[in-house]
Length: 318
DNA sequence: AATTAGTACAACCGCACGGAG
DNA sequence: TCTCCGTGCGGTTGTACTAAT
Image 1: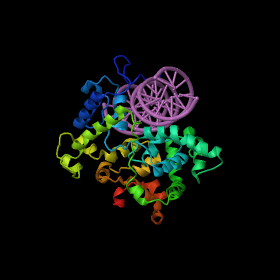
Image 2 (image 1 turned 90 degrees about the vertical axis):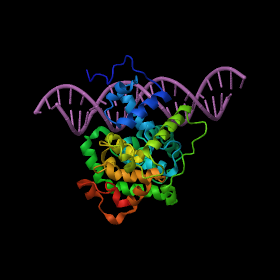
Image 3 (image 1 turned 180 degrees about the horizontal axis):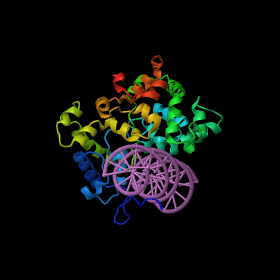
Image 4 (image 1 turned 90 degrees about the horizontal axis):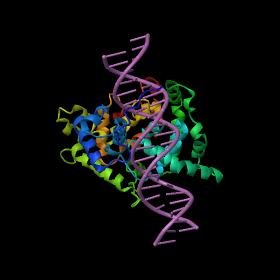
């Protein structure tokens, strides 16, 4: 029937990754850059499916991923985006560059869904996010109702609505833009994080040396010198959040992805942003905030429709 | 102190899409 | 133009951990 499995099931290891495997994967990617996943198991000797390798990288090993608790802003954003976009986690993730779609999806399924339900049961609504949950899954964009192109277009058409809703979301908490610029640290619930997850963090940390060869540096260019591994140097260093954006929003991320991640020519701009991100304060929120609050710009719909400007040109924000 | 239930996270699976040949 | 391959996405499952009894 369908396609053959991506890898033969025999001899393919499954289950949790070990630190050794992570190291193998990381060092391989360090050398060759992400991509060509099919070749990864072969070249690394990992007894893993290529998909598994990709997933491991994009969800856990890739530098720039924030782990731990979601803060209020993130939470609200997710709720609203979920209402607008439905379960398009990749698209949603593109608004939260430090989070992976998997993370967001899990968080939604384990926390937010219940939370919203509870709020609804209680007759309350958190001022808009209510509809979110309700409409949520079925809501915003009818899922398989239309082909992707169609819903993208539709979403783009609705971008204004989206902005409005997001603005509401963000303004719910008159909170400190500071919180946006420098989201609360994940407060890694001490015991909660599985022992290995944290070691994955450590492995990711290993990458920092690679990301920023020198020191605090601006990373990308610096490492860029290592010519041969162009893929690597082009993709990795920016990782801190380009990875997130590109990985999750890469393409079918959809309009949201288009709007947010939109790496025009991708990497160069994003790598700058990465610089900012890696520097400490993730630019994502402030970018988003700027975009949302910048009503005057008015290059909303049209821009999106035509050449996808808004978030597309990150340089605008710096 | 032991057992059970609930929760959170990590990983896998299948499908769909886009690009290359 | 068609087919195949590689990749990404969303849904689901499995497992570890924590809290409650």
